[in-house]
Image (cartoon, one colour):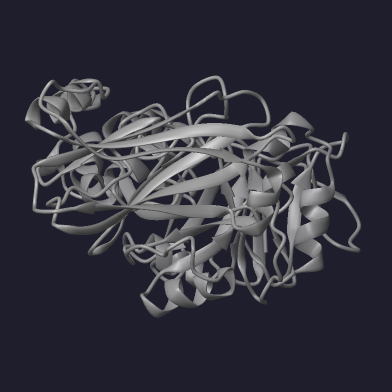
Length: 431
């Protein structure tokens, strides 16, 4: 995507070895911009293969610009537009740095070439046209959902409760149960859909809300309100702070939590700005949580990967080791065919109005396999099981109690509990 009118600002060829990654995973390659220019284009070239992944990011004189990880090999930044994952801004004079992440370096090493060019508007236009287009508004009952339709959560929750065919969900002190998903990605990191496309998909799945949690960036945040109104769903600002020692979602409109800051400070930063941090997929293979767990945390106890081995008891075991953990769930949707769709699993929050993050902070959550499946909710000192006839209600050290109706309300002590079938597959949980 280069133009005849380009000026090379940096060209570096470098071999990386495992010892380099062990020394420092994030490397900065500095270059100078002698005067303010219209746009820059950064290209990262290397022979990608299994076990070999390099990440790409950018920092400018004003600070962090963005991150695309291993999802892109070429990005542009200008005042009018930037590649998703990066914040549009003037390309000011001063020292800039290409950030190279040594995510996976094979034993025999990897050779990369980084090139930075000053480019004109035609290059920016070319990059912009290559991005996927936003879809039309969701059509429901013969009418488009748009900005004039009022609260997205009110619209979705009405249709949701009607579709379940079981009457009103329990209402506690004027609060309302809303259904959603706390983990998803767009083209602003390694997802395949633009913000609007993801919103349309989540709305079609019957969700009230969706947290959009792209990796190490908040460049998607400005697009969330309009996309949510357009498609009739509340989009919660989020960010997946991603390091090799663990991933964490920061939920709420709290600005950037720099992934290069000490992980021990992520929760403090989120809380100080009015948000919440959640430990992601704590048992997630090579992205498991390898840091201490503060109590009581919020954690993605139910990740979509659980569906691959439904009888896997480790997620429950991890939760029971930290019983004060507030459980949430996430599909971790990137693109169709690679992950479960939004709402698998579904997290339910008992919210005041649309204050979804506040409900999580207060610990008013429950998780189910899907939006229309069996559900277990806490109603004061009672548990309400819905669409759960034939399942067993149980918890740590508790007998398994078979439920004999679609709607059952029983007295219960606080603490983890769940619904499981005769094969020990979990269908819903709450605390």
